[in-house]
Length: 448
Image 1 (cartoon, rainbow, N blue to C red):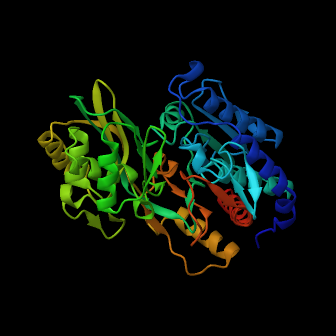
Image 2 (cartoon, rainbow, N blue to C red; image 1 turned 45 degrees about the vertical axis):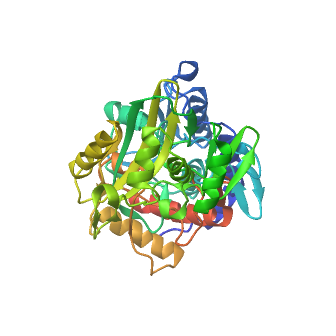
């Protein structure tokens, strides 16, 4: 009979919420080499703050102030259970798109708002404080439980790679950075940059990250009235702003492009219709357009385990010297990287663009009959009462794929709103408290 942690979990709800708010106030998006830290001063501060929170809860902690990663541990024994998450966030985008400032956490209508509340500061604190609730219930830990905090998950995973090079690798574990009941498969992630010298195209800097569907694209170049006329013809919404035109879309995570509307591709379609000279714009308009599955480039790419390929145009930057186009692709788990790279390289060359690999992450696939999957699914069903939801395959990339015998586990419940990487990112507090219950029971089960 599993013990109940209801009393101790309830007592830690408010302290957990305060810890999340403290972390959200740190604007820990990537600043390469900022203030002498690999990912910037704010990422260093967030990692350090996470260890201080854990230390106050009674965990053994380690952080070398290098700015890459940190960890916090409890328990005894040779076996190590890992809970892996990250303290970095994506940039906030246009602050005017937020109801309240992105790094000033606000609670309203039962939700906690702020960048990182859902991805991934909130969920990591929920799991950490769930572990504290198990400790307070007097339960011994015959296995060690280690929380691993990475500092570069939203970009190149350099923090967790450094951890893997220097530290003990957990025997099994999970990352609280996706959905319940659990994620057993994650598509390959390929991010590429296509470049060419600028031969007279208007300057632009569009999008915030490869892995975010851009919700707006601001054009400040020439022929703005002609652009507006073309946007009208195409039926694309826009706003006139001082000095430019803002093309409107809908922000979303790149793993779920069907939930967004890509403003960069809308702008590219309008500019190409006007005869724009930028090779990146012509490539976008004529080979991708608004097709989120890239079928013009690759034909149908799909498998039964993980579904179709998705393609996101995340960045378009045109400087006086160069055009740069950033693409993010989520490739089905049974397909190979080479099957995608070859046709993309050829298409890029046809438009005078040069292919560069920006990032590559191998797919995750943990079979449904694996003991970890069985245990976590059983825990979820016992705590939530949900017998219907099934393990998922997704296009998202979580830290689960960084380590063997690891899956993504919550915090979002089936049907919950996804707000990661979007303006007004938030977490529903009632759902977060439910997730704490699941995490507490999972920690108990995995450390038996």
